[in-house]
Image 1 (cartoon, rainbow, N blue to C red):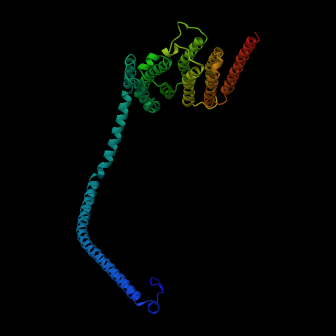
Image 2 (image 1 turned 90 degrees about the vertical axis):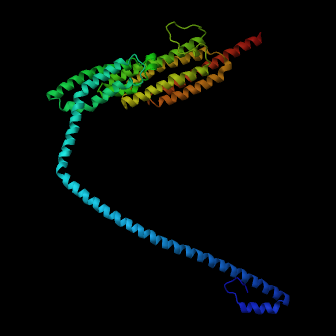
Image 3 (image 1 turned 135 degrees about the horizontal axis):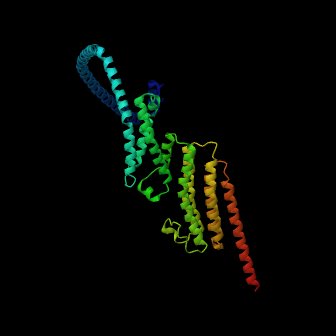
Length: 397
C-alpha cells in the first residue's frame, strides 16, 4: 500500500481507496496525484533539456579538438623533420671534429698544467705579499687584515704536496726553499697573534678569532703541545681580568674604599659594591661563561679525548682563585636580612658549576662547589647563633 515503495500494487491501492474513502476525499486525492504528475513531468523536461545542452556542448568541443589535434599533428611532423636535420648536422660536425678532439683535450690538459705551474712559480711572491700586507695592516683599522695570513696558509697548503713530491727537481727545490723560509715568518706572526690576544685595544681594532689562528698553525704542522700551552696562556689574561673585577668587589664588600693602583678597572659599574646575588651573577655570566667557552674550544681544537691533564690543571688553577674570592665575599656578608639572597646566589652558583663539570668529566667541581655551599650555610648558622646570644644577653640585662 506504500505508493513510494518498490512493491506498490496500484490495483489493490485503488480498490482500498474506493472502498474506504468518500467522494470528496477521492476528488482531493485525484487532484494531488495530478499535481504531482505535472511536477514530475516538468522536472523530466528540464532534465532532458539540460542534458541536451551538455551533449551539444560536448559535440562542439570534440569538433574543436579534432581541428586542434590536426594542427598539432602537422607541427609535430615539422618538429620531427627538424630534429632529424639537427641530428644529421650534429653527426656531420662530430665526424669533422673527431680527428681534432684528442688534440683539443691534450691542449686543455696542457693549459691546466701550465696554470698550476704558474701558480707554483708565483707562490713565493704571493706568500711574501700576504706577510707584507699583514705587516702593513698591523697599525691600521682594516677588517680584512685578518685574512692576509689565512690566505697565505691556504696558498701554501694547496701547493705543499706537489712541492714535496717534486722537490728533487732543481726548479721545484728552489721554490720549496723560498716557501719554507716565508712560512717560518708566517708561523711566527700567527704565534705572535696568540701571544697578543690579551691586548684589548688591538682586539677592538682587529676582530681576531683565536680558534682560527690555532687551526692555521695546526695545519702548518705546528706541535699541538706548544699551541695548547700558548692557547691557555692567551685565555688566562681574559679570565684573570674577570677575577680581578671580582676581587675588587670583595675588597669593596670588606670595607676597603680603594684598590691597588696597578689594578685595572673594567668599568664604572664596579665603583659601588654589589650585593651577594649580583656578585655571583657577575661571576657566572663573565668568568664561568668565558671559562666554559675556553674548555669547549680547547676540546674541539686539540681533540683531547684521554689526556686532559693540561686543561685540568689550568681550570683547577683558575677555579681555585674564583672559589677563594667567593668564600671571601660570603664571609664579608654578615647581614642576616640577606640570607635569602645568599641562598639564591649559592643555588645559582652550584647549578652553573654542574654545567661546567660536564665539559670536563672526572673533575671535582661539583664536590668543591657543594663544600663551599655547606661552608656558607654553616657561617650563616653561626651568625644566627651569635645574634641569638646577643639578643639573649640584652634581654637578661
